[in-house]
Amino acid sequence: SQTIHQWPATLVQPVGSPLSLECTVEGTSNPNLYWYRQAAGRGLQLLFYSVGIGQISSEVPQNLSASRPQDRQFILSSKKLLLSDSGFYLCAWSRLADEQFFGPGTRLTVL
Amino acid sequence: DAKTTQPTSMDCAEGRAANLPCNHSTISGNEYVYWYRQIHSQGPQYIIHGLKNNETNEMASLIITEDRKSSTLILPHATLRDTAVYYCIVRVGNQGGKLIFGQGTELSVKP
Image 1 (cartoon, rainbow over the protein chains, first blue to last red):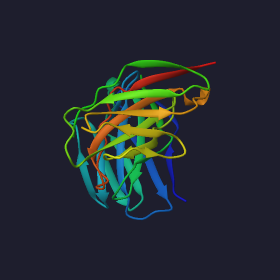
Image 2 (image 1 turned 90 degrees about the horizontal axis):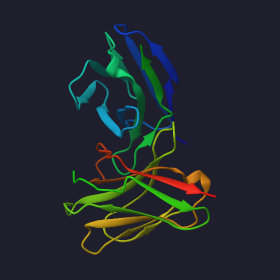
Image 3 (image 1 turned 45 degrees about the horizontal axis):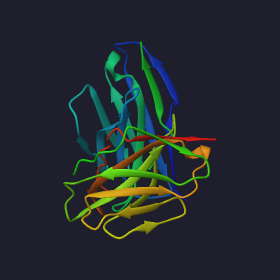
């Protein structure tokens, strides 16, 4: 069966510090991968998606970036965090068809 | 992808059926209706999806009107663990594409 992991589960970072969130998927190959962010009390916003290694599509302009160094690894990064980067970050995967499967999420607080 | 409209919140008594409506009047012929839910502090969970026929699985039933401009998610016997935000999403299916989440309906199941 397939599983998706995210770490860390929670993170508190100062403004201006770098960020690296990792997502890995097990039990499937060549998945589509997604990064979403959910600000407090709001819906999910798609940040990035990837259909293959090294292929990244960005949905909104921001100071975040994503990379896919391996087939089942998706990384979300920032060089300098802003207060507005606080939120709940969710990674998801899908096959070509049908539903997306979400990870447990990382709760990021920028102080 | 078509926009959806859902009530902000609903209450349901435990053991009763929960009927969650969704309007998608601009849906295109090749767009599917997907339902996800998000329990507090967790990642969204896929529930069900359909194109034009009614669908049923172990979690819920999906009723789509004949003109496909609206649909209803039915949880036949709601439990306290069904308390969550329910998202109705329409998108082109079978492409593993991105999901665009709205604000959803916050369902509270009460004892």
